[in-house]
Image (cartoon, rainbow, N blue to C red):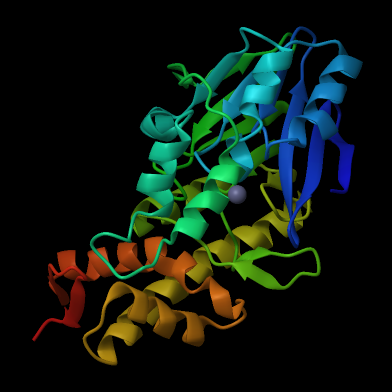
Length: 318
Ligand SMILES: [Zn+2]
């Protein structure tokens, strides 16, 4: 694991490690009295970034978990072990899946295995378990008012639903720094070489679209996502426009996939995957959440119907 820590704005640090071909990033925002830690990475990540940095800064942490994916929360138990009693925060809608790896795996990773034909094998479950680290206590919901005082520095915690229902970002308005994690996902999450790696994953589409619009309206000068290079204002504007365009395109491709003929969710994901292009061959199932969301919109609009299954079969409305 190659790990780096760099100061991207005054008192704002990006801690990055390798996760297979891509990077994962945690953000530490230092005030005079405390530091806000945005995400804790994978097991082992804190020892390579957050923990030595907190020691160097001499600050106690407050932790924001942006959403319940292993690569963003698995280091939490390690941060708590080093700093017992640390305040843990997360968006209210994500609390049931945080700190409970088995439930997160069942409801987020294996979500389309029972009613649909999106496979979730024992090997996938084992890998997911390895990526979720040790359990930790349920965080408290992001406080009303959505602001955290760190001593001479105020951070706004912004609801940014889409990638998860309770996804929460941290905005340092005075410095124009947004720690966005996976609130917006561009055209794809990229590997270090800049190749598409994982498609945008969100539901429902309307929530994601609104979040992308909300983030685009913020005066962001430094955008720190979970997996992309650090962006300045120009790069952020381009990335957010790409995020919105990808959502529009995935909506159209889901409709086009359905127009090819009645199909299950996995078959529709395969059609969308081919048409979207630029993703690894083995990343078809990663489209399930997003395609399911767009299918849900088509059904709600009366443009498609769904037979219950399992597996469910979708078809264009007559
Ligand atoms: Zn992520």
